[in-house]
Amino acid sequence: MNADLHCSIASPDPFPIVHQRLATILLLCSTFMPAGCGRRLQRHDYHAPMMGTEFRLVIYSGRRAAADAAAAAAFAEADRLNSIFSDYDQKSEIRRLGAVSSDRAPTPWIPISDDLCVVLEFAQRLSVTSQGAFDVTIGPLAELWRRARRLSELPDEARLEDARSRVGFRRLELDARAQAVRLLAPNMKLDFGAIAKGYAADRMLRVLEDRGCSCSLVVCGGETRAGRPPPERRGWRIKVETPHAPAPFHLEIKHAALSSSGDTYQFVEVDGIRYSHIVDPRTADALTRAQGVTVLAADGLTADALATALCVLSIEAGRELVAAFPGVQARWALVHDGRVQVESTSGFPRETRAD
Image (cartoon, one colour):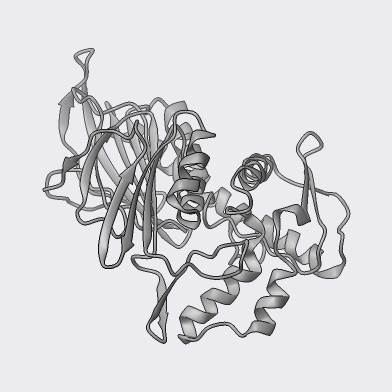
């Protein structure tokens, strides 16, 4: 899960207004700014807890009622997607898939939703391209290492071996045309923590644009999805903190997505070794290399998933992976012998120091 990207947008002092439909959503600020056509747009910020983190919307609209309705629809879309991709909600679609896998393997072909099919199709393609560095079947291993962080102890080898037998993208078969999937090993568990929020950001922005709010920004925890820039601005000015990098920086983006991944907040230290929350699906081990990655892509689905895959891979292998996705750029911060090595792809945007 990529929760290390911090997005901050300069705004006036906030004043809270409780949304009449979603009581958890707060309208935090509004300022009038002119649009290119001479119409004055009003800025609104909305917050809501979603998918185990905080989601934020920034919407410019000529009418507050229109912005309120668009925000409510976008959060409703996120809630719908959570009912598909949540690994905590026992009624979610992926949990129901796992329940079928626990009864028998291989499972019969199981019909899946449009959204799950779209995300799985991309995930499987990335698994092949990254040679297994990204894998949504990682659920059993992710569960073990969550327990390790909670108890501050490493998983025992017997548990790891059992989890290994239930993980592997080749143990999942997807028929995208029939929109169906089957699981080939018993007790498989899918985990979309490294891709679902990016997809949610894409879908939420689409909802806002369909409601006439194309000048919007969506922040889903560590995933940022930018639409048309604010009035009289070339882009959205985003403060980015790549894990382990020496200092934050600003990027100006529009019609794009940003994602960062690393172990800044989620890790466990055992016997002097720091184990990340990111697990290498190929080895079943949590990462011990201190490396953070920021990815810029055209969409959140790509940015979110690639940020995790690039943390698993070396910088050299990561550059090869990025090259397989036209338009994607990446920035790495690797700690080696106490020193930070920062590298980026040649097309990564020019950075400006954060204040």
